[in-house]
Length: 58
Image 1 (tube, rainbow, N blue to C red):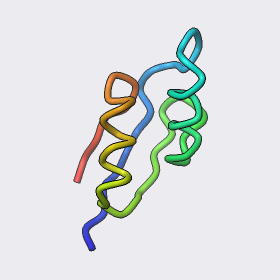
Image 2: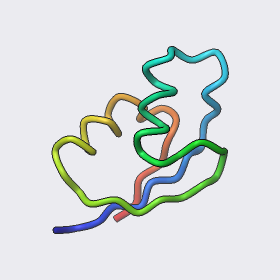
Image 3: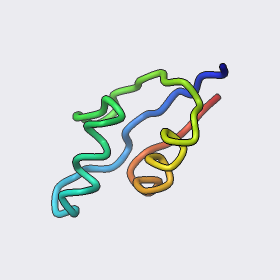
């Protein structure tokens, strides 16, 4: 399966608890941290929920 690189570009300060939990679920908890995850429907849904806090590259 294909992989996606996700970089956290926004701060979770003053964000909803569910958005913070989504970032942690993706493996992101600090600014400018990058993780590589498999491209699954579940991950794409998480990215969509916090799209204003992350940048995505293939």
